[in-house]
Image (cartoon, rainbow, N blue to C red):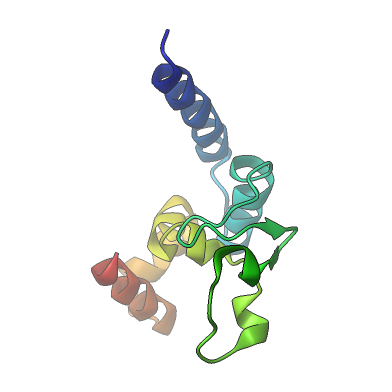
Length: 114
């Protein structure tokens, strides 16, 4: 078995276990993402910055903050995967899409961008 196959099986098993739990809210889905999928991963997905807990080391990847330094140092689940992917896994997320709520509009906007 090649390294690629082992990596795929490992990722698939993590994702399967998270999806099998079928979180009931966006916040629960984010908690599962932190605890189950990315628990031992200490590098941001997009920029490759290292982080500890939920605090990003901006110097580790030479990231230059344009506006809000405090927010830039935070890890947010929306930066790991598009928010609409997480919302699609939750009952509330599906409800927001089907109804004309403000949150539903937000998720549809994110979906178009994703």
